[in-house]
Length: 83
Image (cartoon, rainbow, N blue to C red):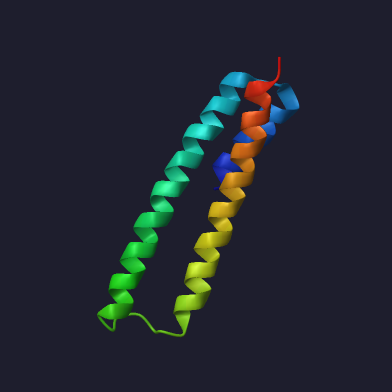
């Protein structure tokens, strides 16, 4: 997420469309990772490995990181669409 955000901000500062495209690709990876981490967490909770009280914190943290990635993607999209 940090790399996605930094790349998107870099594309915004420089108006570099290639950098913006890289940020979009990184955000796609963030989405994939978020789904994998959430699925693995659910399995841990079901298996009794993970403390159920940690569920909300973990899931909310994942959701917030994914949202940051989405915002970075929106920045990158705007740079790509500029004429």
